[in-house]
Length: 629
Image 1 (tube, rainbow, N blue to C red):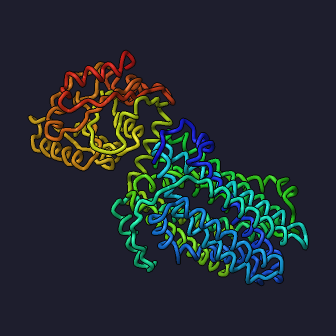
Image 2 (tube, helix red, strand yellow):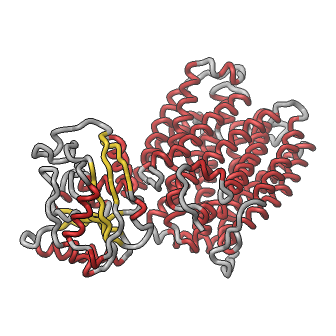
Image 3 (cartoon, one colour):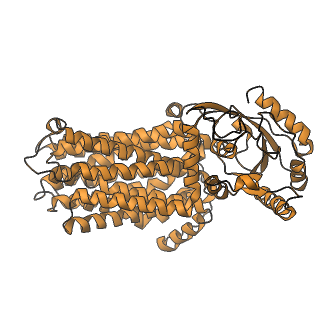
């Protein structure tokens, strides 16, 4: 049901396939935070009347109670989202939200903390039921090239809703004795508006309408995790997303205690910190589409994790040793230069979290089997919840053990670095794509034309001129699907670059007169890749040019397609001759042309295997390259 790709992610907000869904999610996230933040403020600053919790524990306890339903009911909600129309599920969930808000309203109006704690759990149930349908809806209605932008908009909208909901909840509860009543009324109105938006979501047919629901959450979750583990990158993306929720929940649930006990700030300062955090992650989320070039770019994930660690560490140094005093408001808070450093750390930490999360969500949606998508997302939600529960317990234990909130932030920053290194060791593709992304965005400014000629799925062979030592990295960074390269074994062994080539599943090859056994192994591996539906790229010249001109294409391409008949796609690199990594002047790495050199990748139309002769392909690649070497 996906539509033709839009040229800008913001165009999706004008289209019925996305806009009603976006506003349904936006209003739901906003309502969660109007209620939760108002209750957290009351439980932190007026603990005796609203629950009796220690102020530093109010945020973690309420946060933990909210995510408990994700552990209990995600497996069931994932099955429901694969069995029933996802638009119908959205409407049903929004009906429940209105009912839940009536319980919450009673708690606010008659000052019944028990009703509010129950309401936290019920709103957790609301989010649990909607979650799998929400993330499975996007790939059902968006093309792969729109997934990064669509996910970025949803994440941006969610955190803007969190910000506005938080600000509104804080403002309403600050109105005095009648504040809780206003919170109750506004929450009911927002719930009704969410139901109106859900009523306009287009039909989203279930992929498995005859699915038999397994009501045992434990066995169902284990089964879904096994399905996810069929694709190692998807499974470790789930772990990476869950870790982000662990990391983020530590900060979000600690803001009230951090503001009061470390920064000597009142409710206004809490709202300010949440605003800075929300704007940061929202900006990072929407920037992902531009930074990824309208494709799923997992190279942004390590980039994001590095920034998260660095700015979390600096937040510790910026906030340690502050002396508590009388509580101040936002106006007084921003007059201190030290507090600007804290706000900058929070903003940048959150922005890099956006770079980290959006590609992981997009990749999980794109690479998950369609019939199991909602259940895999449900399994991910369970992992998220478990990670957040552990985060809440860890935060409570650390704070009860005598450590300060800044020391808690430092602990999590160190843990983030360790977890990132562990994930990138298990799946080096993340780190490889990061290095490729850095190369393309540091040394070159890459123009790409004709990438639509590369199929979204299925086997094909790509042939290209060979200009520099980084040709494979440039091509691999431009094409959204994994590309298996075939290259001369000597280039394959180049220090540092060898890491990328091995990680990308590159096939080393040697001439028959030099190593006939390696040559045969290479052809067998190429055939295996193509039979598995992969993209294989070869450089038919067999060598990097040393004069800027193309050498004759060799006959290996004919042997490949005769054994495994698949389409052949010609492409040409332009502008790399004379760059730092070319052999201009005889030796590479001697004549750097400066940063951000303009280069291009031109992709031609597929050629049928029967017509894929070396001479015909060379003619097409030369035409694509033109005079720009």
